[in-house]
Amino acid sequence: MQFDIRRFDIYRKIPKDLTQPTTTGAAISLICITFISTLLLIELYYFITPDVTSELFVDVPESGTADRIPVHLDATVLGINCPFLGIDIQDDLGRHEVGFLENTVRTPDNNGAGCRINATFTIARVPGNFHISTHSAAMQPANADMKHVIHDLTFGDSIRGFRQIPNRRAFHPLRRFNNTNRPNEASHDYLMKIVPTIYENLRGLRRYPYQFTFFYRVSQ
Image (tube, rainbow, N blue to C red; front, side, top):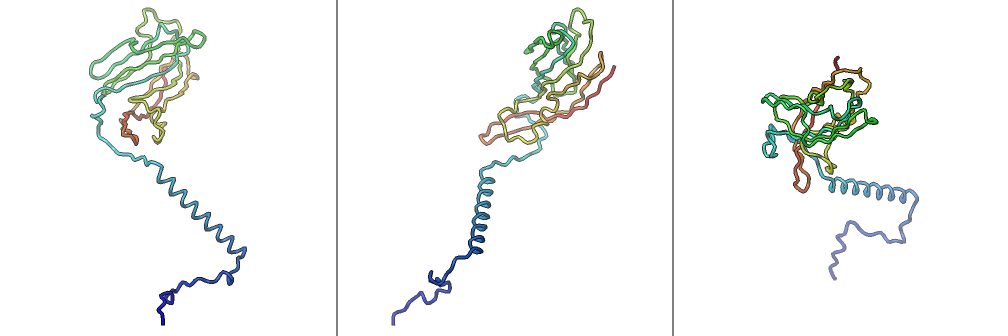
């Protein structure tokens, strides 16, 4: 007698003539296929999506600008002409520049009554301040209204083109900040705390932007 290994098959195939398709079985089959396909797509999405991780550093000496912080300021003063305006910079190391205009573009705005200032400069990593003022003008304007709109203010490297950065608002919280409803001849102060950040994309390209928070106050 010939030995047949198929005798040990415990998952024997049922002849097709003994099976019968049902509506319930078809519904369950479609649900299972949909469920499995959904899980497969979700897993594929998480597999191809890069993870953004955060790490805390005490300092960023490898940035190449360990002692200097690049600043980009774009703001419009609505009530003072361009010839009167400049940027004052001072810090605890003794720097005191009045009417800084290097790498600065001043464009008449508000029908010539105001001025838009687009400036790029560096500051030391020590306490200090910078502000737009009329201190460098030979003659002071009759109208000292410093109401303004901050189009953008950033510290460090630009993050344009880096789409995976979380909480992008933390890098430019003053963007489109409008305080034109304040009293005339008021002084506007922004107290800021900035934090260095390292961002590295999948290609290994690093950027060194700064996150910051601010407190705004106005006085007369």
